[in-house]
Amino acid sequence: MGSSQNVALIFGASGISGWAVAKNCLSYPLTQTFDRVIALTNRPRLLKECGLPEDNRLELYSGINLRGSLDDVLESMREKIPFLNEVTHMYYCAYSNATSYTENVMDIKNINTEMTYNAVHSTDKLCESLKFIVLQTGTNNYGVAVLQHIDKIEINPPLIEKAPRVPAPYSNEIFYYAQVDLIQEAAKGKQWGWCEVRPDNIVGFVPTETGMNLLEPVALYLALFRFVNGPGAIVPFPGSRKNFNCLYTDSSQDIISKSEIYLSIVKPSEANGEAFNTADTDIPGSWSMKWPMLAKYFGLHGTEPTIDGWGGIDKWWDEHQADYWKMCEMYGLQQRTISDSSWIFVKAGLTMLNCNRQLSLDKIRDFGFKEELPVGQGHYIALDRMINERLLPRKQSLVCK
Image 1 (cartoon, rainbow, N blue to C red):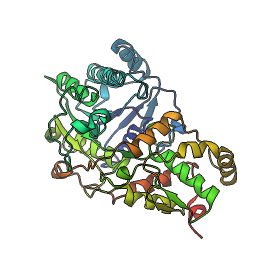
Image 2: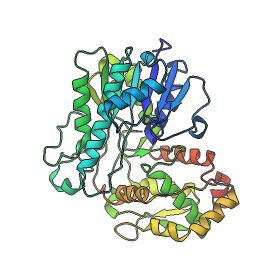
Image 3: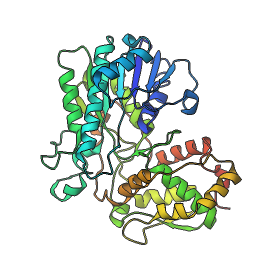
Image 4: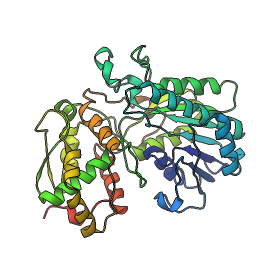
């Protein structure tokens, strides 16, 4: 650990996970751990738009399209990124939900597997100093989101890394398995190691708009609900009753990214070829605990759901756009658009994940990673970041009088 010429390469740096890896590589576990932090995005981004710390070690390169051929990715990386031979650590946080809401669920598996293949093999070919690759996957390793077959999958929390894979055909759409297999194959006979990190629902914020963030649409809804209905208003949980009560372990973006950096920098030999759950705390919580906490942040009173299903907050949001514009004008906020796909993501997260799925953290704790946040605290950190980016009114405007 230290400043022994470590250089980080991050795929998916505009997403909620990759953004946090880029931010934390600049300071964790030590300020001088990395000499360069190379953040890659597909869509054009300016560094000043990304909300990352000002640091001359940070570099941002856009237009790295992993959905092209491997030759195209190699050419793009060679053309755009100088001194790729210096890269020692690659963090793969890219994800495409381009076909998530179509009928052919296998498309998303094929796209993401191909993207991972291109990232891994381009890094292997171009980065001769490579020491370690971190692949971020998630709790669908355990089948919690294989929703059409959920009645056929045995989910016994706390979920542990050595649990067997979900059997076919129920696992056919879980692309995490294909990602792991291709990295395992690529690593044979190489000087670099790798590991897999498995968070649950990710709690966090990224300044650039993304459809893969449950908290942001909910936070914007709560801020507007407070603006329309006043402090102390009752706001029911907008999901299913089972979802409201089921237990799970929050995975905040900073905890996830720090665990990934820790394993690759501090414990690379021990972590090589291993999978690790990661979360804020091994104490599980439910929305019945966290919804009142979220509501209180906005000066509201959060209650259990009044209907068993989707609460229609997307429709409410659309109906109150004139109020949203007024709120933004009153508090000097940046206006944010919530896409249909974002609302679908929120709806799925609050109505369809209706099982206890808390993670065991015994393994990563045994490896020495002790970073922790109390239940629900990660939401507050993300909300504070939204305030700093002028997406939510300042706290003194939200607190109940």
